[in-house]
Image 1: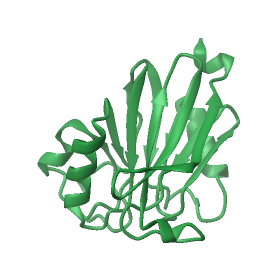
Image 2: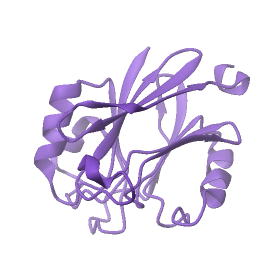
Image 3: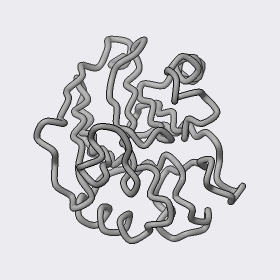
Image 4: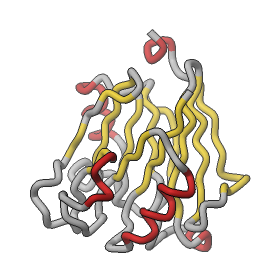
Amino acid sequence: MSRWLVISDNHGDRDILVTLKQQLRPDAVFHCGDSEMTANDPWFQDAYVVQGNMDFDTNLPLVSTPMVDGRQVLLTHGHHDGVNWDLTQLKLRADAAQAEAVFYGHTHQLAAEVVGGHLFVNPGSISQPRGELRYLGGTCALITVTAIQWIVQYVTRDGQPVPDLKFTFARTETQKG
């Protein structure tokens, strides 16, 4: 079992990244872009990170496909994949990468669902949330990964879990194999 922190769209608010990493103590950290930080920032040293549409450091990759704890992950901001409209392009990219989990940002709205055997998680924006849940003041996702399931718990800027925003998804047989 491991715990993964998925965060996005902090838009220059570096302090919240430091605070959440220290407070939540995840086993792996994924940043879905729009950090507005440079690729050599020490915070990224032990994190998987991609470039968003507001990141101008071209040393940040547009897409990353790390193998983490034996699970293939696809990490992207999503702006090149039309995530404002649907997940079709992102699903095709996930199929090609054989990704179990897909983490993306850009919309500033949280989402968690399984599509075509892939777990898709948008952590929302930690600094500039949009949509009906913007009253939470920003969110990230803390994912507990087990042999048989993904447990996605959304967490607020102050590190508190949101009770109504906890979702459990069974890992598919393909993912388990």
